[in-house]
Length: 309
Image (cartoon, rainbow, N blue to C red):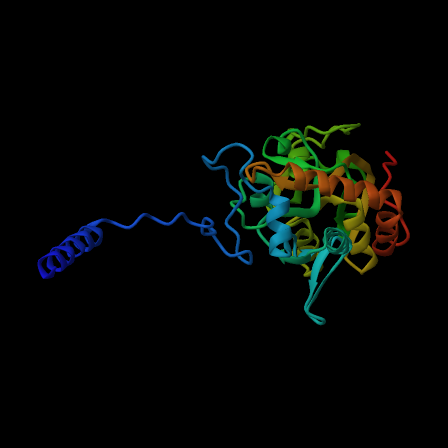
């Protein structure tokens, strides 16, 4: 009996030793670790993930709770940062806030150079441009656009001290015209503008000077500098500057009209849901009169949400 008991102990000990040497089965993970917390999502770049497994840019923005909008801090009355009140204001700013409200997210503004915005490939640094961007075929190669949310027109203005010698477009021949870099105004003067609708021939042999934003041209004239004879910008920008006392005089008729849309980066794929949501919001804001009301607020009662030329 005692011998049997000892044999049983030896057998059990051997069994336990074999179990201890065997590797335990690996536990299946309950979920994959996130690539980044919702408050700091990774740029929405294409990956090798299976089709349909990536989040649309809209989903990322909704999870984050913030839509990052590129804008210009010195482009009144469309957008500018008021140093006195430390607040953003302007037509585009209010449109951006309203878009964010309808999406149910907060809005944050970033201020990259305009040339970086129009070039595309934003690398997730901002989500959308609500910054008075004209829709052109060239830009549509790298950006996706909503339907137009308003319309504007190109207008020349000359320094007030030159108003007697420069009264029309023909008088601009050989003169220096200031424009914002990477704008449709620069393209117009260089003869490369591709846009819908009527475009008047640009003046001949002008010297094109570029700055970061159109308003800097007018501000240079306000400071008394005579680097530029004229400026080409949006008619509403010129009118606002003249109203505020800028020593500039509008000349001739508007030279072209352009459609202005909200844009997102094509490289931020997938983004179809985001583009559809933005387009629906633009259509709704036209239909319910919101865009018209914002336009009249910032453009002296004028409704620029309807194409008039």
